[in-house]
Length: 352
View (cartoon, one colour):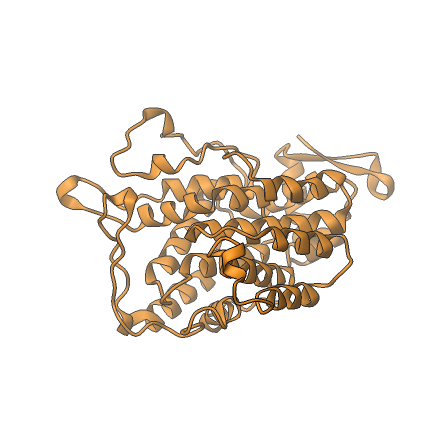
């Protein structure tokens, strides 16, 4: 993990306090602000203070958005007072916080374009619009070479195909490793289409976070807050190949990111590891260290937060029927992953 920045340390204090509503808000803000780093954007002190007001319950998210908008209307010289990119960072961060705080989610192309529109309206001229030209982008980790992005004529078809394939895919009986490998590939495919002129990585991140929450996952906020630039670089490596240099598409970097995001692993996510010239045997970590399914891992994460939780509550959190949850947890007990202590009524769950 990278060293936390000052804004991250300030918001982390609310997580340490343990008050659930404040902690959840703080985690969402950390993810939202951390994602701005994929484009080298830094938040203003005013945004951090506004985030604190929202976390403490003094203002709601709509009031937070209004405060940020008005802040940048007050003076035409505001950009001289802040980092020149703080306006975009602040506005997009508060919008990400709003979207991640909402329960609703539709797994389709419209939802992806709607997220882009909501994030960048008034910031990018083409917010919410599919790009109508082809482009390349030099990447430092590729020694200024570029990923080959989808042709603009095929963007909608490519997105609809990838999402349809994912909808029809079954994670049933897959190990956590197999599931994460699949999630990594799906995420990298969506990103490679690069449907928008700007803001693709942040849009993809929000879309994937919302999607993963339909599995019952509460995202580890520290991973995006501190490693969003690594997330982008790992997407680049997942979509780059150069046969002359014996370099092939490699999702292992992205898989490590998702392991840290969804489980209790702590792989070292260093940007230099993703460079095509980097060679370090110690970084070739074997990911085959988890034998849980995706659903089992989601339940483990939930129990870690609340060992007294009822199965009815777990069913709601992972969007499964009570019967399915009971079946999964029975198998988990038989596999000695968890056990029940002190009976049904007053007992608690213990992770073995």
